[in-house]
Image (cartoon, rainbow, N blue to C red; front, side):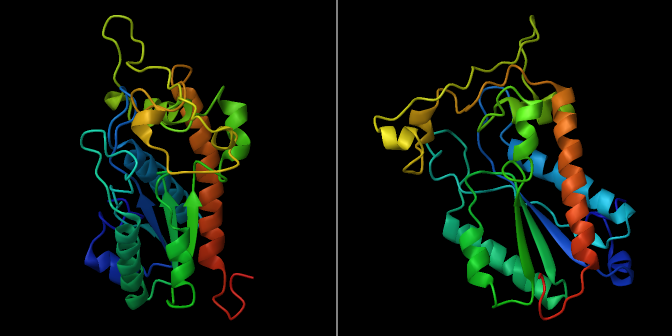
Length: 261
């Protein structure tokens, strides 16, 4: 039994060990180039959240990882078979109900650990602000949490099924990474992206929800071939240190009128 995972503990344990902070891993079900599994985002979220919760527990924080949500927003990937979509409004309702449950049970702090770029939780976090007794925190681990070290570790981290995600897969679920049986090379294209006809979009001055079947060849965005397990392990060390450190601070901080200031 891993005492930091709600799915593995029992009622007696929960009664005797009140939870100070809950962590909710948010994933997705979608293709990741030709070499990574459909559950890549969920596997990543569980690995990162689980290791961070374990490290925080070892430092005395009463944290629990909730069972992951393996579906996310895929409205721009529905041309690919078996991409499973939850509309943003549906995802917001799911999160709201989870928050209501935590509030009922006296858990006042929730970290949403998001592993899918298509999931946008900021609107619902803003909507729930002041309407619940639960303080909500959002961590997109692939963005600000690790942005400063990505350039040190990777040639090009990539946007989707690129070097960064492939490195994590090689390190933590290598049995699910497809390789050529003769050469051992990744069964993946180079993740090249097709530019739009509009310079403002290409430069990032204007944004859209990108139709993924037009943007990519086989859903990959970023070259996965330079990835190694060692790079994935280096990234994980940084993520676990930073996220677990935050969880320890969060668990020990008094819940007064000026929280979190």
